[in-house]
Length: 420
Image (cartoon, rainbow, N blue to C red; front, side):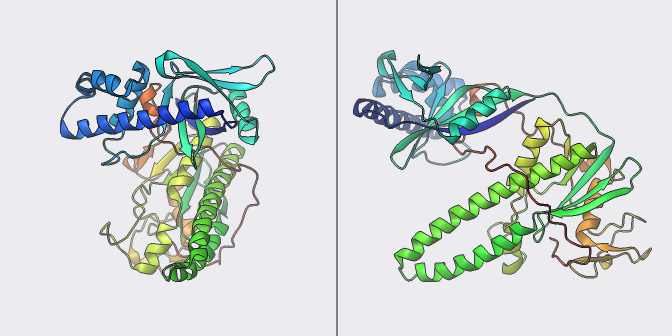
């Protein structure tokens, strides 16, 4: 099973000649991608091979691009056909035929890239913290055969797509069930092979608290920005960036803590399958303005991606379980009814009288092997990608940011939190 990890490499300031080469290459590549993409939209139902024959010679002659860049532009345009209706600015996709990673006699890292007329030019890499992180990942056994040349704030950076082959995770005797909520990112229950609850705890409560504060601050700034305040507009951009970084960092931290628990208790991980978590009028599944905000703040996609990546590296099996009735099913007697829900946070079975916190009950049902087999969807292959160059489609850096130990936020059973 192959896992990808993307990491950014910063470049030292290039000379004027190299800047001219990079600008020309970047503009030509983007224009070529745009032309191929427009041709693809006109020729509906065309295959990738037919697209290659229809555009290869024309693009090479028009933009004077080497063959490998022309093929890379065609692959990029093909991969974007279902993601967008127009190509404006995209990174240059470099295959292993277009670059070489080397070191100078003094030990300085460089990237030798192919330019026009098959000539190579050298880009020195800045030896900062991102480069140290790159070397750490390389030491773990990851290798790379593709790069993305990205233009950001008039400067060029490299995104390295690193890959490593992992064995298929083995099934373990115990299970960790994870219920995703708006007040607590994770409600966790650990069950042993005899279906007995070993431990229950909460992770990520600070995510909801921090997001609530940021939301209030953004609402206040938005009212001033609507009146034309330039300071408010700049502050909004800064707050959005800080919020995104905080949520991403905490998602990786919580995922790391969950995997540590799985290793400690020799357990598999089961998590709710919330692919279509978002709600709103446009999606025609609105649940009210207030509830929509709570649901849409839940960083399920980021957390699940982090959990899946870290679990695979530690040979932990992750499975997704349907969320249907996980908060309504009594795991003592199996009774399922909405009448069991006394409050947002309180569950009381009308059949046997069993009482529990709603989030904890849901996490037990997620972990409980009594669930039907058709409810279980293995995600062992969810991070598996093709070894071909077609697997590189996005310039977004998804490597774990700030993965370090975190203090567990254990919430008592009486704590009230809305479960969605």
